[in-house]
Amino acid sequence: MNSEVKLIGEFLTKNLDVPIYIDELEPNHEIPSIYIPQPSVTNGIDTVSTYNLSYTLNIKVFHTSSVHALEETEKLADAIRNNRMLITIVDGTVQSIGNSFIIRNVEVRGSNQNFASLILNWSSRYQYTKPEFPPLKGVGINNGVKR
Image 1: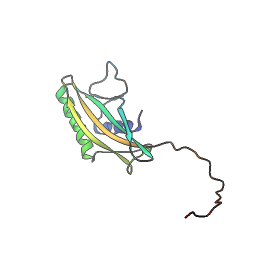
Image 2: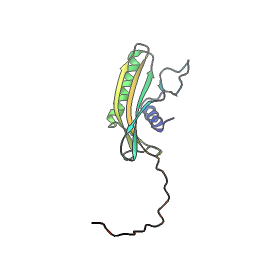
Image 3: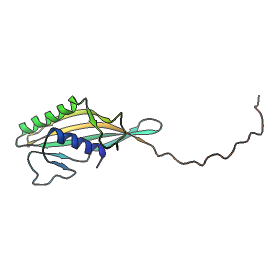
Image 4: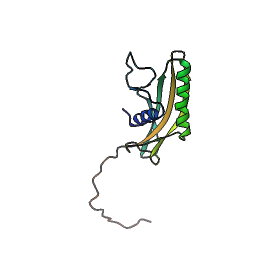
């Protein structure tokens, strides 16, 4: 599991004390509950030495009715917004600004099937693999500067 997704799951659990299902939703899952699938990922160039991965995570919050699901999902979205869109890094496995990573966008979508969706977007930077080159042994100059 992506380390950022794990941290998001921990954040959601602190704000809504319900069971969380990750990667696979059981047919007879508990209600209320949260389902966190794998995020969709796109990549891009970031800097000369890093690349950027943009994540979209579509979390489903299940409840006894669509209205309750939407209310609980809005509470989770507000908790993220009130935290300045920052998710705190606990274990240090994610490269970030300081000790948090920034959620770029929070979106809530209701449905008529007793769940609501919480859609989160964020980006992470990763270092390119650097090739190993043997060190230079010595450099000799045979001629002077040409004019």
